[in-house]
Image (tube, rainbow, N blue to C red; front, side):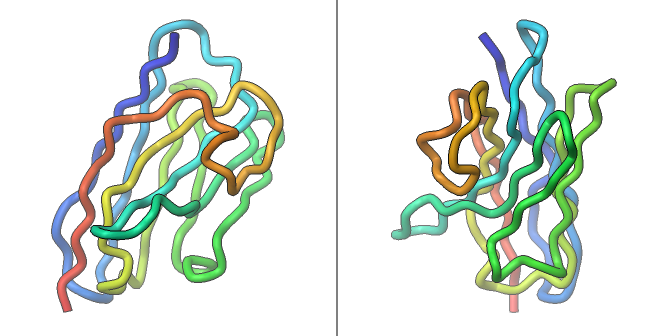
Length: 124
């Protein structure tokens, strides 16, 4: 069993930055993908970014390209999401997720473990 714990959410003005972190604990993590999803009120959960645990290849949804950066740290079993130039439409609960097998990185069903979520609110 893998536990994922997010931190770093909060309230920020438009144009500001936040850094989210996700720590994986429990069994020795041997996943293939770590990702971030978000869910705004009244909307479905959507893919934001993912990183291959072994190669470091990164994937992003178009609206965050150039503003968000996902990174992973093998030694600490963590994945981070640096969010710059934040916009009000980035407001959502952000979830960290881990996949144990290869699958569509953008598809929530690929991921086996999820964190509890952290709120990000961007004011205009």
